[in-house]
Length: 151
Length: 197
Image: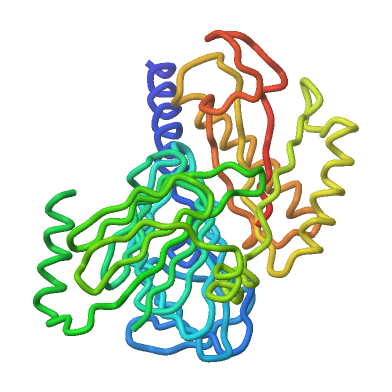
């Protein structure tokens, strides 16, 4: 009787460990600025916040650079995105299961320049990463590419 | 998928789109010279880019024009974005002595290299990823590999790495370093990988 109970508890603990494993961290932990030069901002829930090296990004943030701005961001799946001056890049959806590498990464370059080095999400699932612009949708099978969208 | 594009086109039409924005997409070779694939879907056309410097331009009519970008054009248009790229992530692999909690001698040296790399980078953060060999089923290996990663996290935290800079992951048996048959006990697959960003 007791041993059955122990097994149940062990299974429960195991199930907990497994369900926690895929979560890479809090919402704040999807990415971090590694480079921020000139004027770089984050738009989050209608607010404009200055972005610096070390600032964390959340899944629905928009990155905005001024005429003298550029920024480089590393995501937890090792995707690297960087933007040049006068750019607006919205992170629309981001999810990453660090156990299976399944996930979704959708961003939208409203204007400006973007450089992408895709990471584990695109490597695991060919249709998981998309970059939108006002006039097109990019399906990303990997790995390195550039996007310019003029107003 | 098709519905997705239809929605995009509908949105563009609704927005009026008197002067549709024009895009340029360029595929680059990676550091090893390998090239991936990007599919550019416009309102009326589509281009598959799968060679180095292959480019796609959207036209004012909604089409997609395939071409090749010159390296000087890439530098002119994308120089600032490229210069802002974060450094590439680097991986370190650690092993424990069999039967105890100590790193092997070689792994102790590797930890030093890891800490030096973290110090060299701006606002570095890491993912500690546990891996197992191919003995046993997925669920127990997932839990075991995560436990291993958590153990390494606490060791690194004890060495002064801020805990909020450490993510952990249990990759289970999905990524063996040495391919083996199912059920083979392979010490080189029982490892912890640390990805530094």
